[in-house]
Length: 73
Image 1: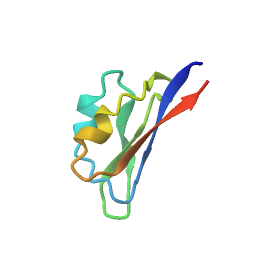
Image 2: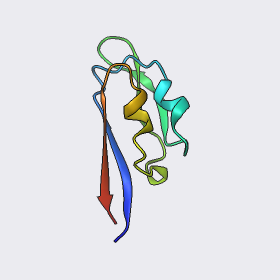
Image 3: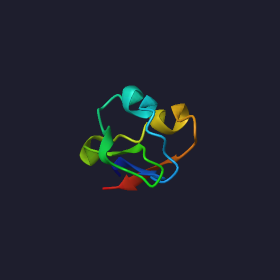
Image 4: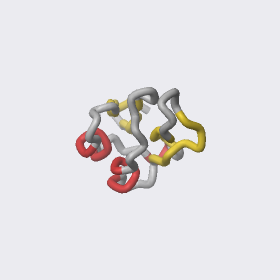
């Protein structure tokens, strides 16, 4: 059975620090061009097919706003 990763970012709580983007080994994450209600460019899955579900992004997130899932494919 094969799996791929998927993440959910709480866009309203993300401060756009970019630590998750820098620590993603596959280049899945990026900072959005749009801002949330607090004025921050939040993180999102720019390349969803690249996510391997490694949890690096969630581990390094200082605000604990990222949840990682493994999805059956």
